[in-house]
Amino acid sequence: MFDLNFLLAGDYRDWLLSGLLLSLQLMGITLLLSLPLACGVAMLRMAPSRLLNALGAAYVELIRNVPLLAHFLFWYFGAPELLPDTWKERLYAGNIEAASAITALTLYTAAYMAEDIRSGIRAIPAQQFEAGRALGFSFLATMRLCVVPQALRLAAPPLLSQTLTLWQNTSIATVIGVAELMYQTQRVEAASFRSVEAFVFASAAYLAVSLLIAGLAALLQRKVS
Amino acid sequence: MLELIHDYWLYFLVGRYPEGPLGGLALTVVLASLALVLSLPFGLLLGLARLSPWRLLRWPVAALIHVVRGIPLLLVIFWAYFFLPSITGHESGQFGTMLAALVIFDGIYLAEIVRAGVQAVPTGQVEAARSLGLNYLDSMRTVVLPQALRHMLPSLVNQFVSTIKETSLGTIIGLAEVSFIASQVNGLVLTKPVQVYFLLGMTYFVLCFSLSRAAFWLERRQARVLKAAA
Figure (cartoon, rainbow over the protein chains, first blue to last red):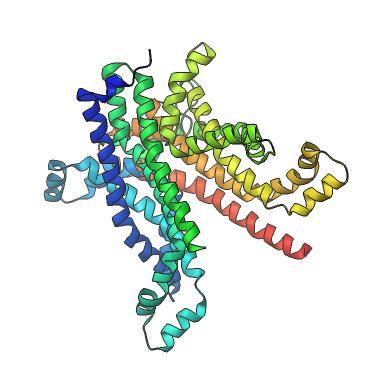
């Protein structure tokens, strides 16, 4: 009955592995893009201007209170229509699914990470900031050289647990047809009629990466505290 | 955009309702509410099992929690889709599948909220209850849980917001909730994807933002009450 071996040879294996690889790539690229964006948004929320604070808060609330699925739908079906024609052509010629998925995931993840970084910044004693200013640094230079590096250290464990969520969120990209792990699992299932085996494989793969990240987070947590 | 709202608002809100099954925003809210209400007792049981003094109960539950938290909700939905019919003996339909998946998934997350809530109650409370002669279960039920549940209220409202967002995944198995209806409308209109999905996003925003404000307000009020009591 249950036979995982047939998944681990031939076409099915290649499909699943390419899916797993693409999921990991989605996570990696999203991380690289969302971390600086999140730092920027967190700075907006701490900036000495009401307008900038409101801008940062609006970004976070607007993104977080809409499901990721709706973000995917908007960035895949809607947003490309707004582009000028030459851009649109170039986008449709390339991998538009992956581009939309990365846009949606990055904006979504950055909104959550910005809050983690902000609470990291708030945990740094105000004297650190004052000392930086007293040495003649500007707001941005003080943040960049003195406050944010310390805050990122404190924020590392929550940022890792956000990465865990990001890892699971990559699976939703299947709705817009990105050929990541969930998509390939459904493809294997449809081609082989082995639903249980296919889902066991996907669950094990998601779980393995999740446990790895969770282990890393636990390690870091011990180091920070 | 106004034309779009004018033509499709009823479909968006209730789907095909009087003629067909309930759908749209109404279905989203009903599904999320039911999921939260049903996952509460489940989460409470799991949370207590995770804290229980009996290893045989604690370990399997901890393992279950780790596994479910490690896989995406989408996979839980697919598992429910394939396993429910073989357990119950008949097709459960999209609504039943989605509800089951959400109850399991949210129950697991609620278990951790319950655990945090119970652990936040000072140990002196348990010791006092035990020294009055109450057994473990009674001291939980009459002393610890009522205090823990009050602490958990803001987290519960936040969980409700998450659940509303999670219902959108029902689209993938063809459940006619609000995201699915929006995609249908997009298919009917064809020329206005930006407007359709913008409206969908704003609808979720209004619903979830007002709820998360409520959670924030509850948290603030609770902090004030605690301060006044201290």
